[in-house]
Length: 74
Image 1 (cartoon, rainbow, N blue to C red):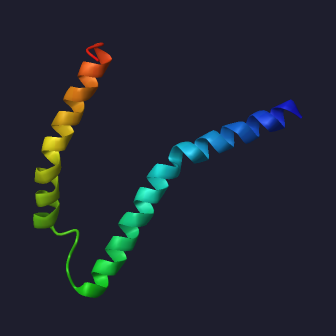
Image 2: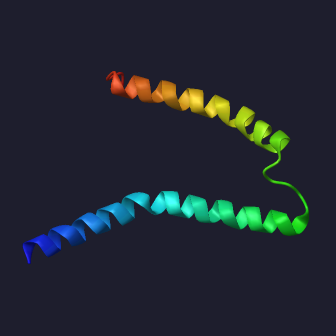
């Protein structure tokens, strides 16, 4: 009985931990399917390059904030 409860807790924690990843993949798939019908290529190299260029600043700032928090600056 105790092993069953432990297994249930592990499964629940895994599902809850992966829920944000699953939601992100579902949203990405929905956008990909919708863009196939519009004729606009969401996954074109130029579009992906633009997205990465715009997100790079936020990634750098996020890493810097994480370093400050880990070093105990806050």
